[in-house]
Image (tube, rainbow, N blue to C red; front, side, top):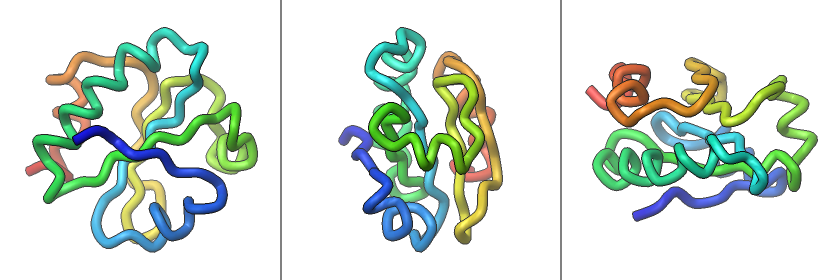
Length: 107
């Protein structure tokens, strides 16, 4: 099960009003590190679909959200819970490091 996409049109329903934590991966097609982290996030989603939802947001197609959440470098991942940003992770990391960053949600 791979991460689904969210957009400016669906962000409020997908993320802000979601039940439980949602990790949003802010990425772009041209970003090499984004492509490296994408399959890792897909694995985390598949292994923890009952604990966290992983969504991808293309910053080139949704610049309003990239600006609203102050995305200045990608990949950037933000965990939303209760409509608020709870955790921010910047840069591509190996799976174990991402799992450590997300331990509060995956536990």
